[in-house]
Structure formats: structure tokens, C-alpha cells
Length: 102
Image 1 (cartoon, rainbow, N blue to C red):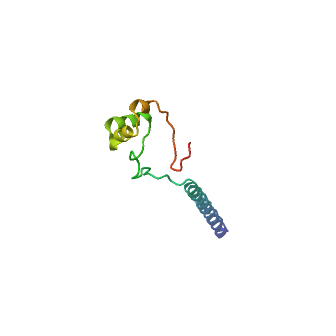
Image 2: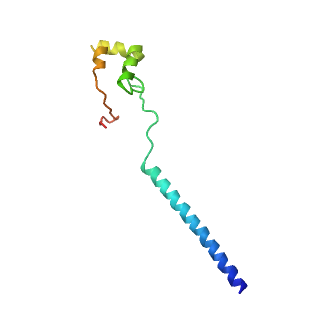
């Protein structure tokens, strides 16, 4: 009878270990699926061909870079006939690299 009790306890212990392993396997698969379905975005959204390296984040950012003549942006705009007051009248919009609005 003693051996049967020991065997029953051993089975319960093994059952808990298997359940514990199953739970962690399911958790790992869930985390893996989330990571695979939502790939990371590029940390470097700038390109060497950008007129303003890294782009602009707002109209105020554009005007500040224009005032500092960062990367000769004021000179470029002047040569195109675009004044600061025209830049102030612009409205903000976002574009992805593929040109789609969001």
C-alpha cells in the first residue's frame, strides 16, 4: 500500500510539472506570434536624399529649420520662390514613404 501512495504522489507531481510546461509553452507561442505579426519599424526614417535630413515633425519645426537655414533650406525655398509667410500658411499632413496618407 505504501508503494501505491508514493506512486500516486509521484504521478500528481509529474502532472503539475507537465501542466506548468504546457502553460509556459503556450505563453511563449503567444509572445512569438505577437512579435512575428507586428514587425518593428525602422529606427532610421531618414534618408541621405532628404532635403531636411530626418524630415520635419511639425510646421513649427519647419519654420525653425527655415530660420536657422538648416541644410540651406531657406536658400532652396527662396530659389523656388517660396517665402516664410507662405510656409506659415501651410497645413500639416503626414505621408508614409510610399506616399500614402494616414
